[in-house]
Structures are given as C-alpha cells and as structure tokens.
Amino acid sequence: MKQNNLLRTARLTMLAAVAAASMAGAQLANAADIPNKTLVYCSEGSPAGFDPAQYTTGVDFTANTFTVYNRLVEFERGGTKVEPGLAEKWDVSPDGKTYTFHLRKGVKFQTTSFFKPTREFNADDVVFTFERMLDPNQPFHKAYPVQFPYFTDMGLDKLIAKIEKVDPYTVRFTLNEVNAPFIQNMAMEFASILSAEYADQLLKAGKAADINQYPVGTGPFIFRSYTKDATIRFDGNPDYWKPGAVKISKLIFSITPDASVRVQKLKRNECQVMSYPRPADIAPLKAESGIAMPSQPGFNLGYLAYNVEHKPLDKVEVREALDMAINKKAIIDSVYQGAGQAATNPMPPTQWSYDKNLKAASYDPEKAKALLAKAGYPNGFEITLWAMPVQRPYNPNGKLMGEMIQADWAKIGVKAKIVTYEWGEYIKRAHAGEQDSMLIGWTGDNGDPDNWLGTLLGCSAINGNNFSRWCYKPFDELVQKGRETTSQAERTKLYTQAQQIFAQQLPFSPIAHSTVYQPVSKKVTDMRIDPLGYARFDGVGVQ
Image (cartoon, rainbow, N blue to C red):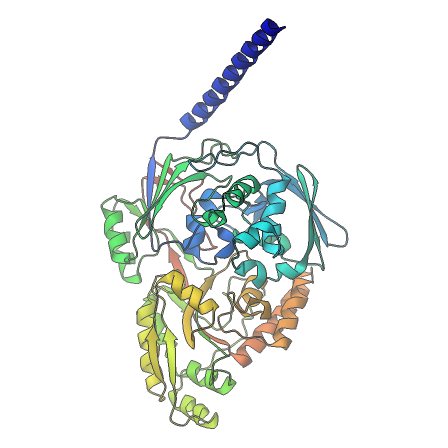
C-alpha cells in the first residue's frame, strides 16, 4: 500500500512538473510573442494613485486605468463606441432596468511580485468591484474608506438597486429606474475590475490601502514600480486576453511636468510619445523630420468655476459681472495661440444635444461694474482665483490664464489673489470646496451629454466634479429626466432646456475648447488620439 502511495505520489509529482513546464512554456511562448521593444511616454504629472475608482483626472487614468485594468465593456481605441470587454455580451430586460453581463472565460489576473493569483477572473471580482463602491459596510470599503467621486457624481450609488452573481460567469445589475447612459458609464474608468482575491489578501494582511499603490488587474500592462515625480514602470502582459494587443515589452512613464523639457526629450528620442505640447511648440515640432503631429478638435472644455457657497458668488449678478469682465478673445489668442475656439456652453459643439443658439455675454467691463454696483458691490471685493499647476488638454497654461483674468477683474475693482497647489492637492482641496473661483476643465468621458451636465453641474456631483457646488432644482430635474429617457430626440429637448438654464444662472464661465495635438516619434506605430482625453498604449508598437 505504502509503495502504491509512493508510486502515486511520484506519478502526481511528475504530472504536476509536466503541467508546470507546459504552463511555463506557454507563458514563455506568449512572452516571446511580445516584441522586445521599450516605449517611453513623457507624461505631464504624477498620478495621485492607482485605484481608478477614487480619481477623476486624465493623469491618473492614463497611468492606471488603460494600462493595468479592464472593464466589463470598453471604449474602442480612438473613439466613444462601446465594445465588449471582460463581458463578452450583455442583455437588457424589456423594462430597461435589468442588465445581465455574460463574462469572458479564461481571463487571467496579472502575476506580480506582490500577488500570485490562484484562479481566473470571474463573477466574484465584478461583484466585489461594485459592492465596494455601493455598500459603505462592505469590509474592504470599511478597511480603506475613500471617496468614489464618479460613481456618486453620476448617481450610480442611488441608481443600482442590487448586483447579483447568477453563476461564476454571469452577473446581474438591477437598477431602480431606467438609465439611458448606463452602458456608456460602465465603460468608464471608475468601473475598472479589481481582483477580489487580491483585495482579500490585502484585507487579511491589514494593508487594504496598498490597492492604491500596488495595482493588479487583467489589463495589457503589469505594474512594476513607481517613483513619485520620476517614473512608472510597466511590463507587457504575456497573458493578456486580447491576442496581439500588447506590442511592447516595456512601457515607461517619464514624469516631466515642464512642457519644454518634454519637447527636448522627444527630440532626443528619450521619449517616443509626449503629452500636451504648449501652443508655441506646435509649429517647431511639426518641422521635425522624425516627429509626427496628428491633431483633432478636442472633446473638451476649459472653464472658470464659481463656488456659489461662498459669498458674493452666490449672487447671479456677481457671476455675470465677473464673466463679462473677462476678455476671452485675448485669452484664446494668448493662452491657446490659435489652437482653441471660444466656448459658450457647458459642453463642446461635437457633443450631440449641444444648443448652438446659446450666446455668451459680450466682453463689457463698464456693464460689469454696473452689475456689481446693483448687486451691492460698487467698490468690488476680494476673491481667491485658483490656477491649475499642470497643462491639460483643455487649458495649455493655467498660470497665464489666471494672471489675465486677475488683470481683467482688477479693472472692475475685484482683487483676485492667485492660489495654486500640486495637482493632486489642487483637486483634493477643490472637492472639499476651499476655492472661491478656480480654473478647471473637462474632457468628455463617454460621449453622452449626461457626462457634462450631470457630472459637472448635478446636485449629486457636489463634493465631486461639481466644483461650482451649484445645486439648482429646475436644472437638476431636467438632467434626471434625461437619464430616464431612452429617446435621443426627447433627451436632446431636455438637455437644450438645461443648457438655457445654465446660461441664465452661470455657475461657471465657459472659456474655450482646444484642439488636441499628439506629438509622437515616427518610430511609433498606431498611436491614436483618444477623444476622451487619455493616452492608451494597447495596440501601440515601436519600429
């Protein structure tokens, strides 16, 4: 008997060795499929972290969402069309309130120095990802309590009634009401799927917060290391479920806040892709023989938000006066240098439902002074004006724009003190409502009007991306109704009314929509400008 056991053990050991060898062989074969190429991306800022659910900026999403993670449904590269992701397909019930996702089989979570998965992706990971955001009593949420600004800005915490695991590869979402943009929203960054097994490991070790420093996903690149304000290193994922999508073995983010330094690095081939050139650098870069400069109209908006919770910005006349005193044409000429167009609406002209009949008030300092006097401020007042420390696609130079607005306001007796912080701190303090007025902006996330009107101006977005902290019921009711209406024509009518209310109330001053340029070495293949404002490296190669 003992001998039989020994023989059985030997046989099992041999089979395990064969299996391990064949697995290792398969991994090596996959790794061999990834070309031994390195791509360096000169990015403009340090991410605040690697947990996509708690952030809202392109700096964070480029560094985590589209490298490490996937979502149930995904936006096609270079577009806003939704395609299958970790869900192969989905069904919607006749009443529009139940979504059933059928999950992809055979998807592996990444193996890293800090986590070795023992199972493949399944329904448990989907349920964990969303329950963590939905249920404040969920154990991981309690162990690592953070804000989920997108999830709450779009009202998903109130919309989703329950999430159920039907079987290991089927998940059902039940909504409290019809929500027209639901599938588009599920392709967004906050919905990136986490590993429930990894979260459980962190929870048991008392290290839940590590999910923000050491990310694990199913995406095209595996996180290796991050040195703050210097570099982020990724390896191509040999087990990625999309065959042929990973075309570089090493992806390095070289964090370079100064745009002129990014240009020099690109010219010297120290990086092959760079973010956001300054308008002044566009013509010289176009003249470089080894650099391509594709461009397209930006799906974005740069604006100045007024915190209506701070007096005297709670008065419409004061906001109108401040808006009228800004010489927006001079800003577009100096800050955007021809690569921008004047904005009048809270969304860009390329967004369906845009009201082209909306007109902005003319630049009129004298009328602005009269409005201030009428509002009870004949001698003006003092105010803080927050200016962004980093270049964004919607604002190439926050410092210069801030100084120009400061000078314009001084002409009507308003003394503005310019305030700035490091980008992560800027956003964090703004979420808390510390600002009087602030320069900020938005690049559309999902191609739906709700992503502008609801996310930037909805009542549920206060403490999130509603930096004006403006909650106006007639406006909010139209946005809510738009979410619950499936007809695009009907939704357009509702959103047109909402834009007209926005123009009357002016919780922020639209400044400009900018043209987006993507400087890239001609050695790089298939790099696409993403209308949603981040950089993606799946599908990108180096010659």
